[in-house]
Amino acid sequence: MTPELEDLFSFLRFPSVSTDSRHAQDVRACAEWLLAKLTAMGLTTELHETPKHPVVVARNPQVPGRHTVLVYGHYDVQPVDPLNLWTSDPFQPEIREGRIWARGATDNKGQMMAHVLGVEKTLREHGELPVNLIFLFEGEEEIGSPNLASFLLHHCDELRCDVIAISDTGMVAPGVPTLGYGLRGITCCEAILRGPKGDLHSGLFGGAVANPAAAMARLVASLHALDGRVAIDGFYDHVRPLEDWERHMWSHVPGVSDADYLQVTGSPGLFGEPGYSSAERLWARPSAEVNGIGGGYQGEGSKTVIPAEAFVKLSFRLVPDQTPKDIMEKVKNHLEWHCPPGVQIEIRPGHDGKPYLTDPNSKYGLAAQAALRAAFDAEPVLIREGGSIPIVQTFRDILGADTLLLGLALADAQIHAPNENFPVVNFEAGIRLNQALLAELAK
Ligand code: BES
Ligand code: ZN
Image 1: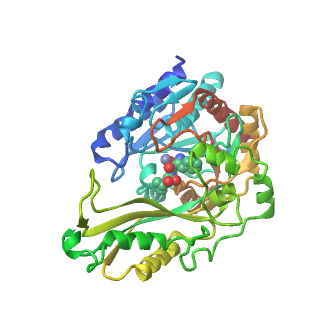
Image 2: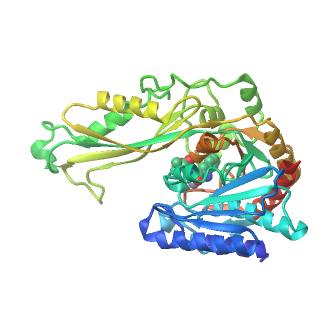
Image 3: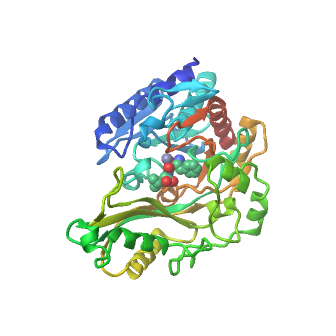
């Protein structure tokens, strides 16, 4: 195994699951390993405590007059459940069929480590970097970066930069270099419907008492019209229409046809807003999703019960110029207004993040395209992303810098799911990409 893969494997062995407090020590150990790696490369490093998981910062000697590039990544990962669906241990990385299999292999340890090792290689080859570099790595991305904005506010002078680079997004097809210039925002909430003071016998009371689970089904169904549009009043009010050049450009992007989405998801059918292709729906239109729903008997066989309560976890993906605050207001109004009679509703707002959009052909965007072209020896495609990295708009708000999204995540990487994987060739390309990017940005 190459020393680069050895490093990635060591990094992947930490179960740095940020959402699970039982893994808090593992998250910290992962941060400390990373810090040691960056220190050994000759960078000046800092580990910053936050109320939860540490932030790791590293820099080369900053030379006046050079461009300053901030590379962001996250060393935390999603939980692994359901564990029984993994072919190999999520924290014992393995290479099979040219891919690295482990939780975090793509999201985000593999992509992030490619940047670190690209820098290490450049330092080995040239003794220095052509830019002022700031590495900023956090351990809370997968839980909505609750402490990073305040970290940025406290350290904004030391983190001043000309541009930010992140590899934590998608690549439309193997070998097709992909520059992201937009991300959807997000706002989440949970709704709980409460009925009787305890579970009831459904024969003794069924037909006379409102059933919270049935009420929840009606409430959830009210979120969409039958044609696929989101049926919340005013939901689309501030949506910026797609530009003709984007629709035209995206219609030529490989790997994102309706047939591709059917194939990669294994879903028997697609569903969404009429009048848009799947790529347009994902990248430039907002959506409403049910992330979890429950209530009542979940065990084997039947149990004749009216549950005392039911819950749903909802998230809404947002596009410019929607704001999380405005949409959550509208969601609340909708849920309260459509709540069926006979139950009480409680709405608990969750985390959120703003959408992001930039110009892929800005001077830095063009540098990123050149780096992608050099690393992959192919013409880059320009896309927006359906996923969210809320800190990207916060970077713009606080540091005043735009972000280049140099995605290496394939559609079948199974991020957040069992059997997450990352092709070895993407890892190697990521190392070349970092080297080419710093060279291009130095020009
Ligand atoms: N790396 C993903 C986001 C992503 C993946 C964007 C692929 C585009 C393509 C990131 O780690 C992630 O999962 N973000 C969360 C954000 C949320 C927890 C606030 C998401 O999008 O659900
Ligand atoms: Zn993720």
